[in-house]
Each structure stands twice: as C-alpha cells, then as structure tokens.
Figure 1 (tube, rainbow, N blue to C red):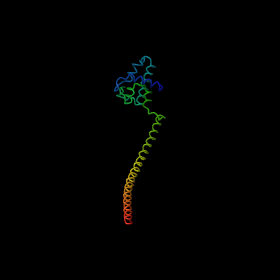
Figure 2: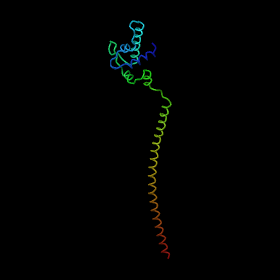
Figure 3: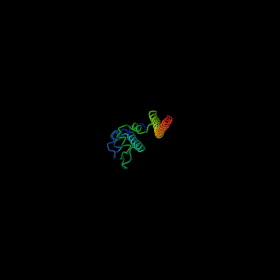
Figure 4: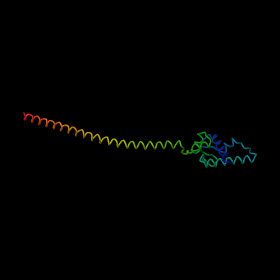
Length: 172
C-alpha cells in the first residue's frame, strides 16, 4: 500500500471512531470494507490494510494499544485529529509551525526599530531634563546675583547722589 492509500484509510477510520478510549480497527474496517470471506485475495488485502493502518497510526502517535485483543485508544494527538474533523494531511499541515515569511519579519523589524527609538528618546529626555534642571538652578542663581547687583547699584547711586548733594551743599 502507498502512503496516500494508508492516509485515506486513516481518514476513514477517524471518521468512524465513536469512542476515544476503546475502538477496534478490525471491526470498523470490516463494517466499511466488507471483505468477501470466500475470496482469499480480499481477506489478505483486508488484513494488509488493517496492519498497515495500525502501524501508521502507532508510528505517528495517533493511537496506542488498549489491550492485546486488537483494541486501541486515541492519544492526545489522535483526539485532536478526531475533534478537528480535518483529514490527516490538513491536520499535520495545520499543526506544523510555519516558516517565517516577510509578513512576520516586517513587524519584528519595526518593533525593534521603534523600541530602540523609544529607548533613545527616554535617554535623551533624561539628559534634557537634567540640563533643564541645571539651567533652572543657574537661572535662579543669576537672578539672585542680579538682585544683589541691582541692590548694590542702587546703594551706589544713592551714595554717589548723597556725595554729590553734600558736595553741592558745601560748595554754596
């Protein structure tokens, strides 16, 4: 049997499974294929289909032996396949991680660029805030100096004005 035929039989099997914990592959296929017991080729073909399906399902972790009497139970992956109602091929394609394509790379790059820009702005903001604070302190100190100097200037003008008036009084 080819893999495509086995996958078709797996899909048929999963379509007919009703109990997740105990099912017989022989019984399900016997009801569906209905081999003629008088024809040895059909019986041999039936046994081949059952054994290939069992091997494929156990190798791909779809079901496991429940007991030695030909009964099986679904694994987690098998339960997901049964619940999904997809064929085996669509289910495996869906569960495989997709390759990174251009539509995934562009947002990653943009996130990185804007993240770096944000970090730079935060650093630049802190530096500007420090500069602003130091300039504010310097402005306050210059205001104090200006007030001090203007007071000195006023005092000096008053003193010179007094001196001038005294000199003028004396000169009369």
